[in-house]
Length: 281
Image (cartoon, rainbow, N blue to C red; front, side, top):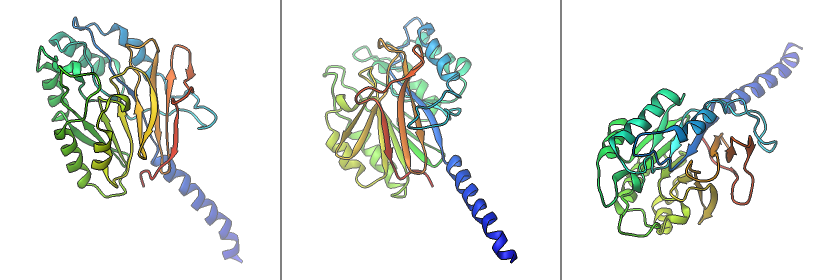
């Protein structure tokens, strides 16, 4: 008789354990790009974006997701941190991250950040000091993030290929991981600006890359190419006041831009990503 009475408790325990496991593997983070910090170092135009990120936690997700946005683990920046890499711009952005933003930031450099035809190593040195190298890898909540720096040709067009060096780095990092490990790639070139997407897909092969984040073109969008998901991050330089909110669980990936001045989720065509994935275990 005791065994019969214990069964409901055991079932309840298993159910609760499943809920706890799901919550433990939920990863929330934000994304933005192309901040274009002024050469003077003035970051006042970025303050509303950072302040909105700092206070986003507790905002209700759309009904399709449910619940509230939890505190984020970090923010991803997809390049063009500066308009041109002056020492003042570097110090201004660094201070913004260290004194105003309330959680860690992981940036990759864009075409503006090395000075283009008027080369300057200021931001290159800053990122190397902060993250160890221009391309780098980190893991959070069972998801591996690969920041992929690709040298931009200042004499070329806005749309360019990822360099061989970038793809070689990606191939090396993926080879170190179990096939099922969920991976997010972030780089400056977005879907619309990347001219060698086939090479990227072939480099990834059968690795579990759940999405590729990019910037460069200043507007938010979601695109699919040969089974690979691309999410383009919004820029403070656009006419919109958006950043993108991401949620990764064991079986679902959600990415939706949030317009903080309008206090609304952006749900137009090619704006929302909501898909099943093989997430962190």
